[in-house]
Image (cartoon, rainbow, N blue to C red; front, top):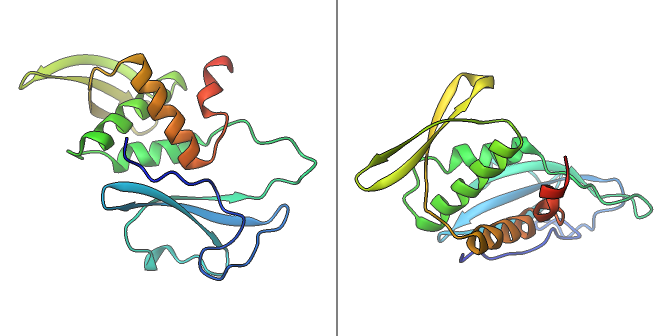
Length: 170
């Protein structure tokens, strides 16, 4: 993958204010030149309507130093990313959408309905019961190492260090 991976910052990208323990702020992914970059904003500087190339965002907070790191990822953030990637023809984004689909199936948000081929390409038909909606997901036939690589990069991008370990969590 050709993503610019950067961890969550310690301060606002706009005003350079440092985030303090337990402070809420916005993290956002931007699609710039076919690469996702993460930028963090304090509450005062955040205005989603003025953000060019905004792909997805979420509200988070700085953990307290004596508190353990949050060990889960918001399925709403992943679902939002999955939906926004619908229709993308860019191979890296199609691969990411496939990996997101696998994760959302595992978390029981999606159910596998069927498989079909179209123009020599395989698609998975997923059902999203909450919205009574179906999705077609291109199956890029990734090798296990490729899926692990995308998952690792995604966890770095979202700054969720435990994403790649979720297979151990029930």
